[in-house]
Image 1 (cartoon, rainbow, N blue to C red):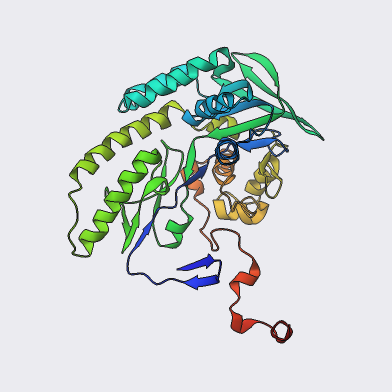
Image 2 (cartoon, rainbow, N blue to C red; image 1 turned 60 degrees about the vertical axis):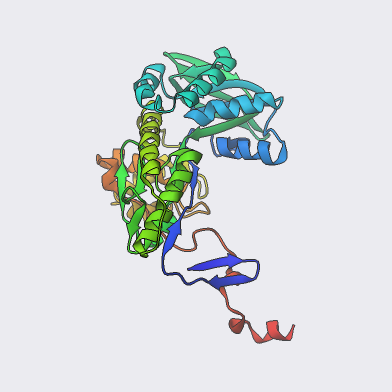
Length: 364
């Protein structure tokens, strides 16, 4: 394994590998989302927690999932003005996930209390139409609720549809994947203990989106599996296995209650930007499909979707929905982008060993 440290590029040998790569925000394109003043919900939360900064004075939050109301209440408690909290999941859809979510009743009660504090600013079952901007930044967000159009003035927008598993390291390590229609993303194949291949173990949100508690349990299970496979003494994992089944029920309930807005993405107007890194529009991606790009990597090579700095983390899932709709395919048939190194952008100089420096560099 190669890692970049303060001392440069280093090689790390291993006999067995446990990967706990976590997750990144899952974003869906909204016309205007490429503008200054539009952030992920996670970015807004990190700025608030790490630096005590609210990214905006009058803020609208949009998307779906528990993080939507959590960030709203955190920002308001810190003194920010919350203009609106716009949830793309209807109350009826949310209720369908409630029986499974009651596997963790205290969390459900906490979420309902947060929502109650937001009052009428929280709207469920909305359709996000456009983020209106000017050269100075965000001016408003337009949305539709029960057939009526609304416009909420704001100077910042936070977007987020729960999380997506960070899987590039797992892919480079040889894990296989399957498309999970419940979670609407590609997830690694692994057994109940996190075994994902020969001497490979996965844990945390990089395996399944279960939250912080689930990540801890998955980490312990993976450690036990690794110890057992090495023939070493390991703790009894039965209690953690039972707890993980309960956490899985809750996670499946969340996925059902706050679904990925696939149909809305598929209907994006041609001028809507899908890939912010490369400024690729939905229309350009549809043209690539018509030119033969009905597979994820072929669509990438023809349109440049997923070739930017984020390496597809923010556009791959939405891009696949557009490709699937244009090609009349199930989204799982579109496939996933090939994992490529480096997993994170790195300076070219870090990839060179000291032995490869030029004579002029040595003289200097």
